[in-house]
Image (tube, rainbow, N blue to C red):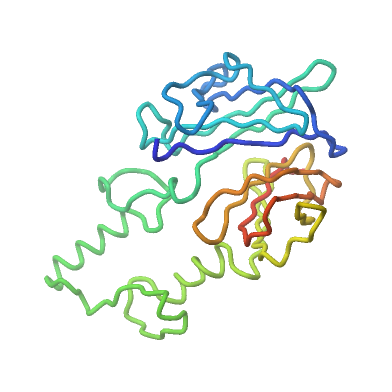
Length: 270
């Protein structure tokens, strides 16, 4: 249960209005007719299916359930991708293919777990790590081959000690600048999906009654958008109160608390 993640989404039409009472299905990407096992609560003892539990969107177009990761009994491997489908009489059904719901912290693989494993989602490849081990054992049989220093981004990105396996500057840019830095604003395209990232400080949210809102300008996408947010402190997931599509390049998000957050928006590429 430690790796059980919250799977939620707002289903909106292209005009930004919520689609109410739409039936939800979640299938396995590699077995498109097989429904995924879901949990109705974070601590539910047993799984079910969307069709069995009759998962539907509420008046705001919102639905939710939980998925078990590979650390839990009977959970899914973090390479598993899904197909999300919603449908309702009178409207065209909607789909999101190749949906990967796992946070990066779960998806990243350990280095050197079997020299020949083919997982690509590692900071450093097995091949390179094993070359380091070979180099250390064959040439400099000591605990610190060539006096390589450890990476320590906390000491400051300008540390110019050069004899490191990976430089402080590189790691600092990944963890502080590139991954979700103050000026981070990345548009990516993969598998027909456009993805947009932004770091929103607490002061970036504007008050709207008892809520706070932000308009996000993102790449031009068709259909619906998926919004995911986590707090910058503690990495707790934030579930928006409302998500509205203003147009194909703008999504409005309303939250209950104006916390600093990492925001990811995905949509089908035009």
